[in-house]
Length: 187
Length: 187
DNA sequence: CCGCGAAGTCAATGCTCGGTGACTTGGACG
DNA sequence: CGTCCAAGTCACCGAGCATTGACTTCGCGG
Image 1 (cartoon, rainbow over the protein chains, first blue to last red):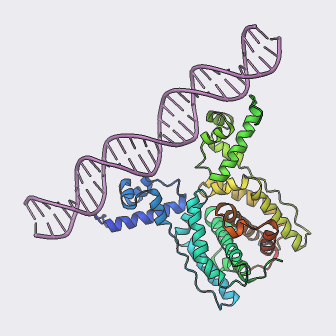
Image 2: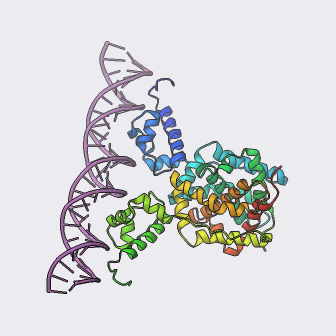
């Protein structure tokens, strides 16, 4: 049993935020109710709107994404593949931010914009830095495979993909991602 | 102006179905209302539940997916790549079934199951037929890239990807898909 | 021209949700 | 021990939704 919840606004706020993130990651924006968020923490739903201003604001704070790709320049292909897969897999295997954003992006243009922006503005430059040409296309293709993997693994839960450990993911996806980034462009 | 809607149940039903499919593809299950579906056709929402039994039944009829992959056996890699990309791109570039299912799968376990099942049971065997080993993993990886592409192109609308024509998609994705299917497996 | 069944309408019901504002309670501090 | 403000609660809107069942209207066959 956790210590019997003192009246600590900062702690309550933080608890609400992580509870919301978990629920958003599992159910998506529309199907999460402020009542449910409050229940998880054991607090009245009105507090949620008091602390965050409303459901939309709660979401945008809970789903803020930080991709933090390492510098890929100078890495040999193998190392680059490992770095990419490791970082992206960590992003959706541990941490609910990406999943919350992904689930919600499917039906909310704002969330879709936020996810696209995170992918393009945060991961984009690091990816483009090692692309010999067509940097936007290459970065976007990497993003598409990452998003597809996250979807298959956590939303669809395709058994063959959900069962892969990180090594296996590295083995399959590494070549694809590095190929998109540094391989030859079509015609 | 279309002919002033006679009282034709079959036609009304069909119109409702395609209207629903379009809306589901654009907004996802939760954000589509039976009122909206009725409005598109110019008919009372109660008719929708009369004809289909309810919103859930309407969706599952509207989003029924037929993937219809051609036989890939005996094709050289280039031809196989073209066949795969062409079919999958057609599936989400023209036709709302896949998009409706994809948008909804993000937040509905039933829709997620339906999409997974379509991918595995319909496309799976055709893909597995040309896989030298690990057929489930290979088919699932193809599926993950296809889903990611659909998501990036139609949900996120990443400019670099939304702008690609079919030839360019073939050039970028063909090698990846064929690589997943017939390339060497990791270690 | 009439009547009857199918096609479509209408109003109402019950539910859930986000958000609001007045209220109560806890605890730190003097 | 008492005061006082922040932390938390409570009851309550107003809106939107799917679904229901009784009603009305169209149009075809006789």
